[in-house]
Length: 138
Image (tube, rainbow, N blue to C red):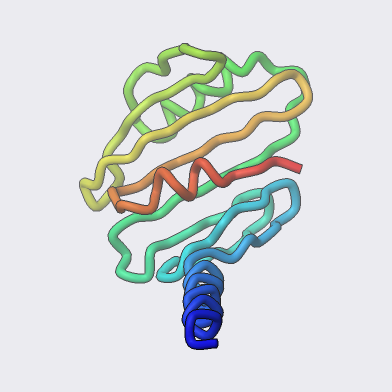
């Protein structure tokens, strides 16, 4: 009986910790695991995730495309952000820039003639990769 109680207690701890760790939230076309210690919000076509300590943020923008070449879209965003020249590799365009607070930002743009997605990662945080890996597009 004692062994069964211990197993049940461990299962309860794992269940609670996984619930506290991430909550899947869906915003329009985007679903993402939002870990404890992060806040997520939607503004139009952009979903923003911000670390509660303000050390990092991620924005995901899903826009319709009128058929414009994604290379041109990437170049226009590079101008807007005053970013590096977009580099095309593995079906995505990447670029970097520093924001107004001199924080490193990484941009990934991918899409087709109907829609494109722009992911901007601002700053650094140990959970950023996990958040990005959890992104699903509906």
